[in-house]
Image 1 (cartoon, rainbow, N blue to C red):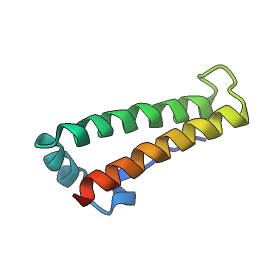
Image 2: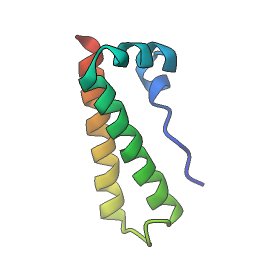
Image 3: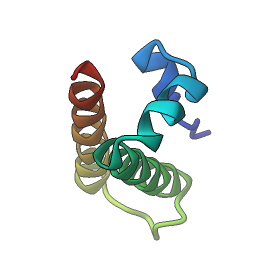
Image 4: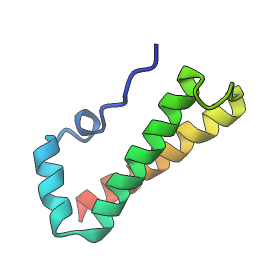
Amino acid sequence: MPVKHDLFADLKLTREEVVERSRSDAKLHQLLSDYEAADTQVLDAEKGVAGGIGDDDLKKLKEKRLLVKDRIVQCLAR
């Protein structure tokens, strides 16, 4: 069963800390939105909602999610 990825645990920050920073940082706010969309795509694909996506396509979705997460980490490091 697919499990929603816990971005905030990976960042070692609380949701509140990240949301507070995103209020004054439009780029971070957009990246968080992009991450949520990418995570939803991965979950839907793993559940089969995406119509039986292949392993290669699932891998690409996960890589996309990881790239967005890396950009969030960079943004938070500023």
